[in-house]
Figure 1 (cartoon, helix red, strand yellow):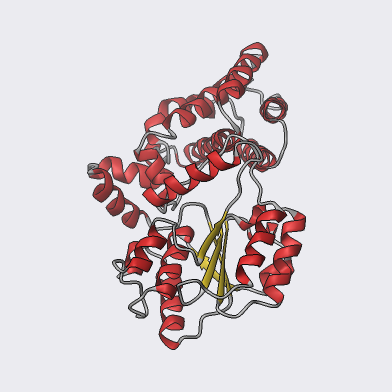
Figure 2 (cartoon, one colour; figure 1 turned 90 degrees about the vertical axis):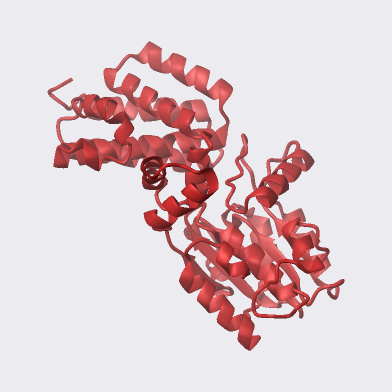
Length: 363
């Protein structure tokens, strides 16, 4: 059964299965939840179920329609996603290739990526036509929080007067970034974090990992299968190590070393990687907090880096300072998700963390 390919998310699947059986799908859905939890995967399965030639409540997976949708080749299924303004066609093909290979793939771009109004206008033109060979025209808008302002307003017109025989599926990891009027015109389905046991099972099945390693990756992925897969593939290990290196330099308060690190890092890594860097910095600082509270290395999320975390903890006088550091890291991550200069974001984080640490008698 097609929905079984989506890990966990039983409530969202139950709601959609019921709507399909009763033929009472909403005209627009908004899937919201953390990155890598299955929003895209379920959106694609819903598109297949709607247009499956066997007309059951779930896609058969083998008919020509299901096969075309799996390969993102169906004429009645359009996908819209944010891409950088430069090398659009190349990045579009990369996005499609990675998503076809694995619906949980977290496709990353080096530069700021947005959804321009032209893409929404082209969607509107296609929705004005009858389905070419399927039952419905389906549009999946991935990362809808990255709609430009003009694109958001243009999309709102379609949501207010949805064309017949159409289905819009929006996905977002930041519900608050969407216009309230867009949210109010969609049926919301919340996607929860995937429990660690489910992540472990999936990782062991996909990568033949032993239980200890699968458990570790599940723990530090924070309920995201996409993130867990990236970890298992070794795609994010280097970024996590960079996070530890940067924090270590920062608490040692060696400005020249920090400047060199920032210059070297921003030459090699793009925006998505720096966002991920701050995610790991937040994770490491949370481990510092846990270590100061519980004094138990076994409870750390990044337990393999426990020695480094213990050294970091020695630079903080109390947990309130660590909390301030976590807030700084979260703000820096959000800044990097916009068009802020990456070099300045890293240096600003260092300077503000340094000011916090100066209040400690241990420095």
